[in-house]
Length: 76
Image 1: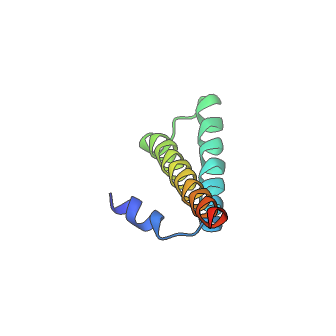
Image 2: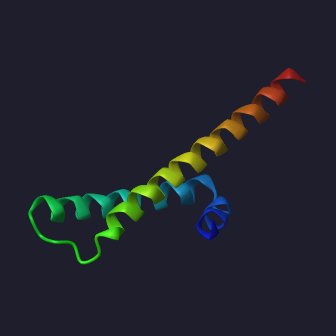
């Protein structure tokens, strides 16, 4: 839960950049696994996937909040 509190404080641009970094890291980990090299830390692969999912969820939440605020403004 500590990770989520830290991520919630970031703005959308920072979340996007963090997500791109994690996707690059995940790609590197997947390549190393596919080439047959044992990863130094196998849990890192799972953690990267979970963090990407967390970031995706936060980005969609922020998008929904932004859309709702725009709808309220347009109704007035």
